[in-house]
Image (cartoon, rainbow, N blue to C red; front, side, top):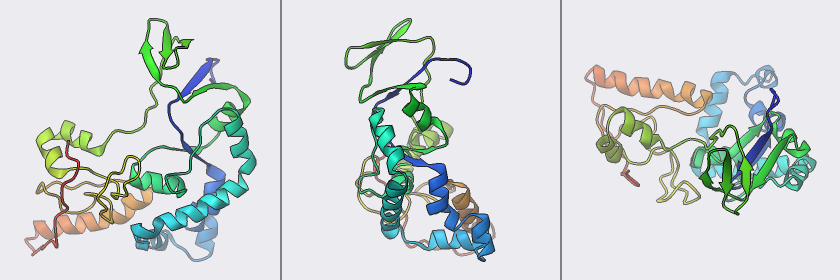
Length: 251
């Protein structure tokens, strides 16, 4: 678009959208900002506060934040919906944060593209998929055809298990099972409930394999505990594990 291309976005399903400035002011900024530092909340303290909230309760905070965001940005959401963009705020209105925790996708932190959709600078086709791709066009599931010189797939992330299969083997990926998600039985996060992120930062069914990830705060915080667990084993210390995570949804 910035270089003169005529862009049409095909939105196949609804998306959670939150404006970056609003998320910072009402959510993240309470822990991570200059104002938070001035109030005595250091980065280390902020990481600990965030990690101390049980996953079983995090959706409550997400629901409260969603209510605030919808009130603050009501006009923004109304204009985006009027442009034809399909919106949702999560299975239980718990918003972008819980979507990230449950299935790692389905959301957009807006830094400008939404206004381009609202203004029509980026054209939108929502609620349809791609039936087939032809030499110079895309045929949609409603039978319409869009001329296209270039197609960009912006389809989100695949399952972490796929990375394990490519890096090591499908056998190991199946042995570990699903990675990420809580077992909330919401879209992309099938049950049973586990109460913590699946197979993250802890011993797995595959000895010697550790999985580390998340945003900057979680990577910073949990890296200490992954390192301690590995160091203990390297030093030959006793490292009893209460229970290895059960394997669900292999493959």
